[in-house]
Image (cartoon, rainbow, N blue to C red; front, side, top):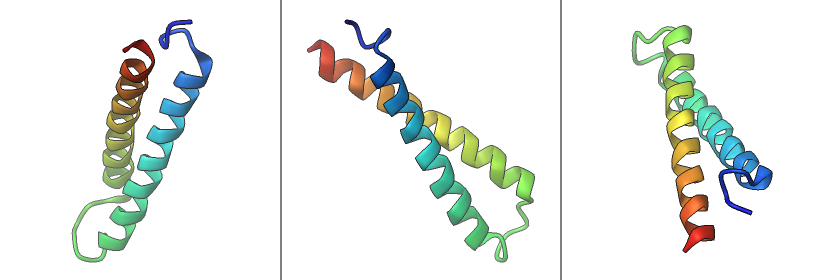
Length: 67
């Protein structure tokens, strides 16, 4: 089964993205007192970073299983 259709690979990439999003939000909340970034800005940047890391995790899983 190709990784594009493998539900486990998709779930792992989703979990990696969610994990990185939580890490980004946690770091952002610690730095919130030092910066003027709003909670919405922190959530958006955490979601963007989480999506990027989830996509990178999916690419790594894709190439690990196809090569």
